[in-house]
Image (cartoon, rainbow over all chains, first blue to last red; front, side, top):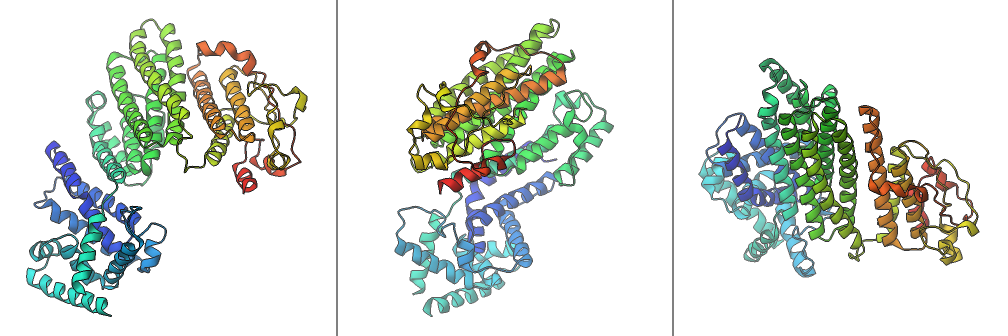
Length: 167
Length: 395
């Protein structure tokens, strides 16, 4: 069973990283509701791991790892829907501030559209680097590969976005 | 172009975060999940069982956590019973998976009621000792705190309809148990002190919840963007369901003639205020068959309030309709708890001070002229309020 200081550490990690994990999930699945469920599942699974008495050296990296695995599992199980279908009825701008101008909202949707068009593998590293602000070394740790390999994938992802933007 | 893209991306991501409510919801579920294991290790419970029983309970609990099934046998247990830890663990798991703050608050309200049910059961059989009493009291306090925190949050967010509903549900249980415990306190001189301690806490909470309900009912019409009309109709439908669940019925459909209509709704006949087209769209109001059972007064009160709520709905006084129906739900909930306690504990619960005025409640004469026949009203089975028909007619 987890120790009391583990409980404290875990809840502090939730308070610190829940928003970041939500943001990551949102840019991967494009649905607020799904992203919210994924945040819950990520922390539940992390807790179950800790509860078993196992140790986590870098909780932030571990949370991204769990979230990433959940997203990949989900994408294997069901075919990805169109961006319009995913964002239908929830407003794609998650802050859903009424004062956000329609013009800005259209630009935001365009940003999401480009990210949505990236293959899962490229989207994964692109979101970690440019949404989560993780550096290649951290991304490599999460994905269990080398920083060099991540740099190559990132370069490819940025090129892909650039070509989508210029179309 | 790519610079513009990154500029927009940075702007967009700055807008994206969990809502504070969602963040708190998930945190609550995590805490409950974390507590689920701790529940098995609570000293007051753990000391009573052998390691073998605890292991058995843990295995059963693990099945519950894994969704493989729940131990129904544990549901009827009270502190001191072998399977009581399983019951508590199952409750924690259910709390952890309850979807949304509303569902969680309702479940916490039910859990508070369960603790009071257990206290009453043990008190009735002379088994409520000081240790169990302290354990039950602290568990009850924890559940009540969560309900009241949710109530406060709903009021802060000006969700007064939801707050009034939650307060009514909780108040019904507290009011009923206040009376049940008072009956047991007077009956059992030996254990009276343990019962009195719990009763005191119930009475304090009751006062606070009553105030919250009154305050919320006073403001249910403040939020202009919500349809109070639909909310009132939905509340009336809930009242009708609650009355049926408490053992009431709407079996008699004979309608008193219009000239007989004088009620506490008001001295004027409510329906005469309606335009003909409005009268035509209102389903006929069934006369409620009065219950003459022992546990009649709360049920009678619920039925009376229900009738008044419908009359108010028909004259488009939606705020009054909502509040009367909310109070009907509360009265029916109270009747249900009292009826169950009298049956299970074999006691006769003392009448509350408010019950003296039962003669008027037992003879409601609310009556609305009968609208053209509308079979839809009977689709609700026993003459209760049919929300679907109402909404269809409204549109």
